[in-house]
Image (cartoon, rainbow, N blue to C red; front, top):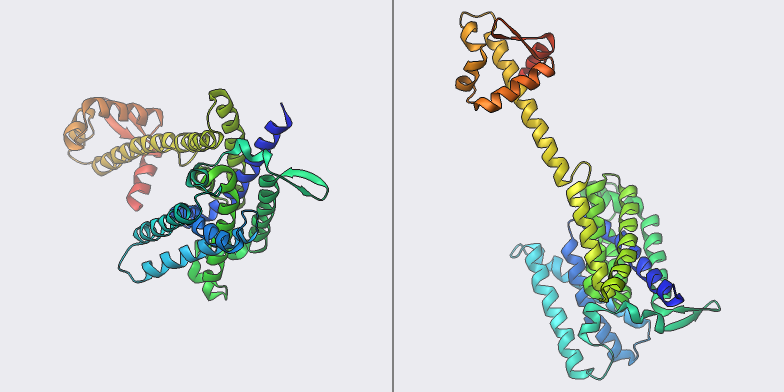
Length: 368
């Protein structure tokens, strides 16, 4: 493996982890679409900062992009607070307006500059090692140096304000009552998202930035309820997507960013289907267990209500269940078989009798 290949994978992993960490809070706050809006509207901030500095290498471009990200959030919330439009509609109004303005400015005043829309949207990770700079005597790819800085910024922000972020994310009213400022935390998080987006899309494009922010965090959300574990899982899934996406692109001779986005979707799909508690398979199996448990509880209650009565000979017969409980014959037979295996009922002289376990089950079901 060449040094360029290693550098591309290292850049991809750093970008993925840097995007996944703030993405966890976006997913928990149900603001996933806001990352899409920010990752596009920061282009206007870059364009305006470029007009001021006349340089694509100026760090002011990052500040301009971050400022535009915050302006995007402020405009969306201002529209939403009027209660005339929902938040998704506000995002749909603000983001195309600012992004289209950036496209017009580029095509009208910066068509000869390497600031084309395709590069911003799709990125090209394969070219990242060619742009280099020297940091502390080490010659590194520019994207790697920038994204390592942004990753450290994200870790520092989450580490310093972890308690405030957690409280404002899960209960903003309690956070305000305790003296924290949910609005300040919110705009701080959005600032981090904006800086991450502008740093990342130089290498991978804004489309992949959205995928790396949301898909790993959404997959981690399906796998755990613990916030620190969710942050670690999101970072791990993002890194796995980056490396597997690189080798997929190499195998298919395709765009690396596109292959990484595909792998984030594939890993999310695996979590969506096979997550232990929240996956589709787990939910289907839980519903199946609940169906049989409910049927056995209904059977136990039915027998408890009629045992020792004058009509017990009729009501406690297996053949009567189809009429009284409206069960199909095959379903009733399966319920009886499971109830016998579970020692809920027994059969005596053709009649169904509750065991001690069955009587306890019926009494508990009646209480609840």
